[in-house]
Image 1: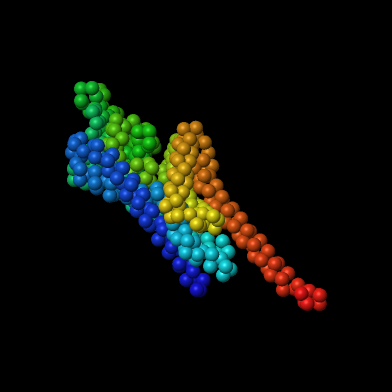
Image 2: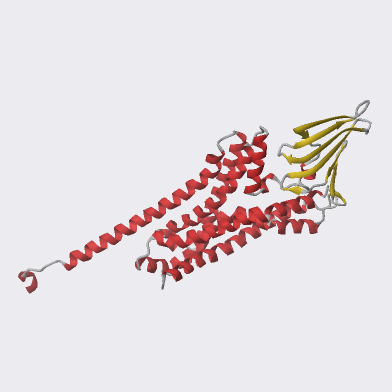
Length: 381
């Protein structure tokens, strides 16, 4: 079997093991998500069909979250089947080292990581916006403009929405007698996670007594009176922003002297997903080269699920800890992914060294047997 065919065989086995594991996990988490969504049926205009649509649209998001766990289970199930059929032993006997076996797994994992990044950047923002619209349905359209209304304020958006950036924003605030008190016109507005809006290139008109008073500012805050559900009918939730959108938002906030810590944590968390996926895929190989290769598939699935769940909890705890205690985003978010990848590479390296020592020992024994000489007395006996 040529090297290319071996690579395709190993990568195909990895994907064939990851696919059913991902489908099972998707079914489980989607069922849980559906039960949660059905609890809101009957509130306002939210219907059962909306709950089903939301669960179906959330599948790409769940694929991204479950990618690392599925990669580990793909290695344990797919290559574990080859190990049960003695194919891994045959390949190693033919001279393929653990690093050589790991190469097609790494290539398949990198391809999956690229696909996840593309989904995160191209599909997830639109899906999250549509999901929020189904949850709240608070935005009203008038022609091409979008209106939001609170108890004493109206917002008109004429320039469209991109990520968490609003263009062509008009804010009309009313006084206690519901008369027009202030009008704010901004070229752009960034919707911050704490409920405030950062208005840019603002023209403010105040109507209190006497003639209107106008003033201009490069930027100012506006405390939004709208609920999170109302706001997210327009903008993508912070957690769903792509790497490019997060980077741009961090730049805007930093330029205005605002705190960017939470957004940097989210940025590095997203960047760590491909690293974690690669580490999980590589971690399963050294396990299969040891006694685990004789373990039944059901036990491998349980081992992969428990390991993946533990790693997922560690990532979540480190991310929340970084936000609450203002820890270094790089160390606390992508750090666990890098440690996982380093541990997997170390285990593969140890398996490589073990195989090298075993081959050297066998050659030494064979060489000693071939060079042994017999005396005439030994020949008679």
